[in-house]
Image (cartoon, rainbow, N blue to C red; front, side, top):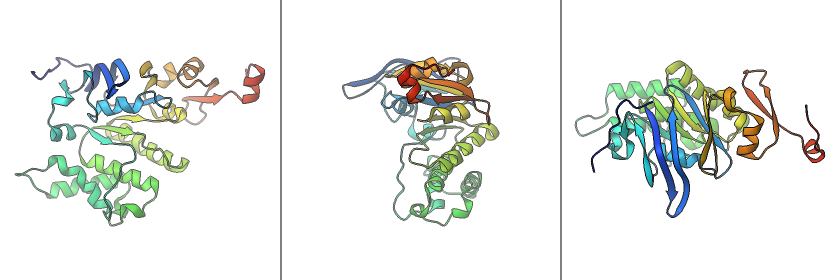
Length: 278
């Protein structure tokens, strides 16, 4: 079968008519997704709704049963692995580092897609690894072992490894799961800086809708394997959407810090008594 190349694709990363399944269990059908260039896109939805499955399809971790994901107009399943890794970086859920590896050595692994028989480690590689550690504020940890670090520090190191790939698209699957609130904000602030000041396109799966509203420029809301809304948080996040996606009665107010939508769940007493909170 010939490789399909799209003419004038709408954005660098997008997918058409995706059917996603694990063996016989179908998760999603007929998904059309566009990741706006230079956006901070966040995928949200309840547990088991298919958000991580969608991210895995966009990163080629799983192959669609139907349809395709495209990067720069090419079906990603037909791209050589190293070529794809030079264009798109991925931080999977709960990544595991080899035992006894230092921060510098792990970040250096991000240069693997650029190595080959005729191109070995160079001063440029060393510079790029150093710059990635500086950008993520882990340079002072270069000689530390990964298992000695806090959760937030480890996540910064993994992001540094992705930066060392020198891609400008980063896919992050639940990057703040199991982190306490301070580390969550630390990692999300880092992602926002990469997006706002360095021009990265970032796609992240998050569980916390308030975090998503505060950081995302583009939101994809999913339920039961389907996309129910896409767009800027201020345009699409309503009490009706939150109840449809999460089954949570709420009101929406303006976050006093960021000016973004802030979801306030209806208190259980008001839910039980049918009291209008407004």
